[in-house]
Image (cartoon, rainbow, N blue to C red):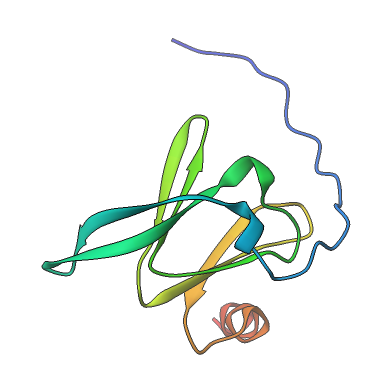
Length: 101
């Protein structure tokens, strides 16, 4: 089967800041790294440019669920895309490393 869809328009969003405490809709126990851990459940529809989610955490979207493990952070870029990267590294470092390859 082949489906034809319109390509999404990328629109830059205003900077919302890093704080995501008001985007937490609940907390849940999950089994991670061989133990039970209580993690925040974030409402992905409300996350935006600059928001930073530190793992472990879950982001719920209407059609997917994203697990951010304890070793990673996630940030929303200016187009509200999710970019996950290892803790202790900045997004700029990762982009620089990719350009070197």
